Image 1 (cartoon, one colour):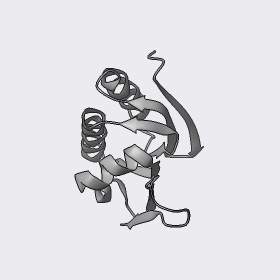
Image 2 (image 1 turned 180 degrees about the vertical axis):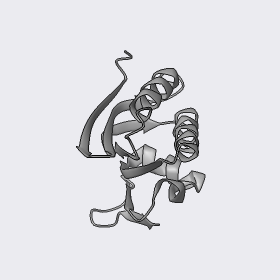
Image 3 (image 1 turned 45 degrees about the horizontal axis):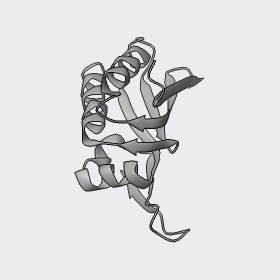
Image 4 (image 1 turned 90 degrees about the horizontal axis):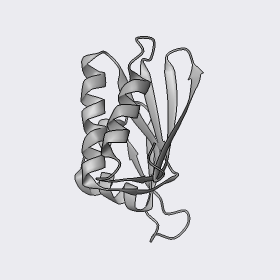
Length: 126
């Protein structure tokens, strides 16, 4: 496992798997990211993969493309993938891509930009 990126998961209730990404998701970790998220979303009983990015320090475009591919594969299997939180650089990548809405459903995707004062988080609604 790459020391830069860690994925921890727990099953919240039947059908929902919560995955916390910690560290850095970039070109050097995309194979691990693809493999681990693919494995975590593979069981048929997983209907919803919730990605918590609040502990992710860095997300580059290559890693974000992996998240988009995981989402696309999940949709083909009747699953959904949502992002529950993102801050700083990862939030900027998601916001600037204009794709944040793809990772929300009826849930709220909270995106907090570090240069904004406290209480001034951007919130994207589905």
